[in-house]
Image (cartoon, rainbow, N blue to C red):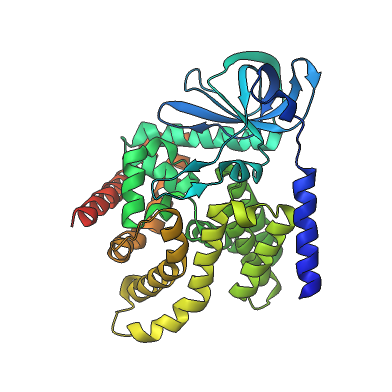
Length: 398
C-alpha cells in the first residue's frame, strides 16, 4: 500500500513538472500565436471554443496548448492551421453560484491547457495538421448530424445528436439546465450507459458471423472508433475501457467482474494523466456513480422486490437510487442542487433511450442511401424524442 502511494505521488509530481510552462513569459501580453486546432471545436450558442496546439509565439518556436474563444462564424474545423492575434492570459479561479471557488486553472491544466485567449483576430493559414483517422471520424460525425437535421426538426434533432454521438451543444443552455435539474443530463453526455448500449449492439452485430475472432476485433474497433468520434472525455474513456474489457471477457470465455474492470480502467487513466484525479469533476462523478451501480445497486435491490421487473423498472429504480446516493455529497458540494425528480424522470426516460438510439442510428445511416428509406425510422424517433423533453419539463414543474 505504501509503495503504491509513493509511486502515485511520484507519478503526479512528474506530471506537474512535465506540463509545459513555455507560455508563462508571454502571459498578459499581446501576442501572435500560430497553431493547429487539436480537437473538435466546441460550438456554443454565441461563441466557439478551440483547443489549439502551439507551433510558435511571435515567430519563436514554442509548445503547449491554449483555449481560444472565437466567434461562431466562420465555422472552424479540426486540423486547421490558424494565426491568433490577441492578449494571452492565464486562467483564473472563480466563485461558483453556491459560493465555492472553482480551480479553473487546474481544471484546464488536467486537459493540457495552460493559457487562454478571448476573441482574438483569427487568420487562416495554409496546411493541414489533422490526423487522418480523427479527421475522417469527425467528417463522418458531421455528415451524420447533417442527415439527422434534414430528417428531424429542432430541438429533437439536437437531442438525438446528443444521445447518439454526444453532440449536446446545439441543445441550448435552457434545455440542458432542465435536464440537469431533473437528473437526466447523463443521457446526452455519453455516459457508460450509452457506451454499453453501443458495445452490446456491436457484439450482437458481429456475432452473426459466429466467429469469435471477427466478433472480438470488430467490436473492439467499433468501441474505440465510437470513443474517438464522440471525444475522449474522462467519462467516455472510462466507459470505453470497461466496454473493451467486456468484449475481451466475452471473446476469451472469462468471467467479467465489473468492480475489477472499473478499478483497472481508473488505474490506466490515472497512469496516463494523474491530474484528472483531483481536477476533473466528470471523472470523479463517473467513477463514483459506476461504483454505486456495481456495489450499492445489488444491495438495494432486496428492498425493492415490490417494484415489477417489467420494462426493467426495478433495475432502473435501484440503479438511479444507488448512483444518486453516492454522488450526492460531491454534487451538493459543487452545485448545491438536490434533484428530487431524478427517480421518476429516469423511470420514464431510460426505457426509451436505447430504442431512440437505435432508431436514430438507423435513420442517420439509411439517409446516406436514401432519405425515403430513413423516413419511417426518423418518424418513430421523433415521437420518442418529443416525449423526453416534455416529460422532463412536466416533472420539473411538478
